[in-house]
Image 1 (cartoon, helix red, strand yellow):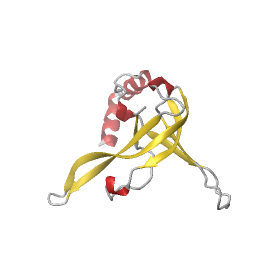
Image 2 (cartoon, rainbow, N blue to C red; image 1 turned 45 degrees about the horizontal axis):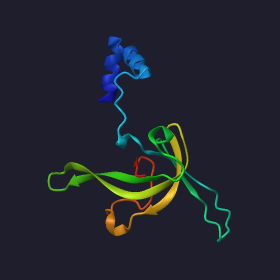
Image 3 (cartoon, rainbow, N blue to C red; image 1 turned 60 degrees about the vertical axis):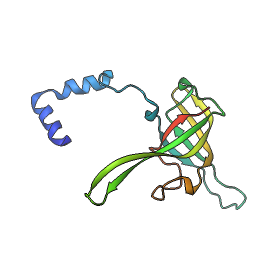
Image 4 (tube, rainbow, N blue to C red; image 1 turned 180 degrees about the horizontal axis):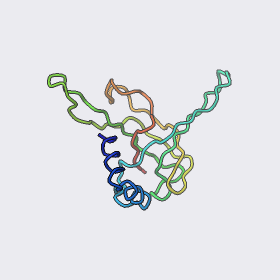
Length: 142
């Protein structure tokens, strides 16, 4: 569908107008709490020392401009699509909490966090991976 739309816009000459509108921010949605996500995950190198556990840093697009500061706690939620087996179609998206992150550095519209705690397995669906992943939503708790 997107290819057909792009071709149609190209043929009608409206493609440049849409590119200009996107660059100017026209039609961009307002920021909502669900717009804040984990956008990258970095893990330190494992040098083979059993005493040293490499740290994992989570980069989020929520920063001091949104009230985050070092020591702030972020709630991590995940959206999971459910499938209706009887009718053979996607049914509904469910959103559930998965973890908490602690901000170690915040600036502007970004922060670096470390895992504070994972929610217990009995509080999360069995289909979900038991780690924080890129795309998980974050919101400021305190």
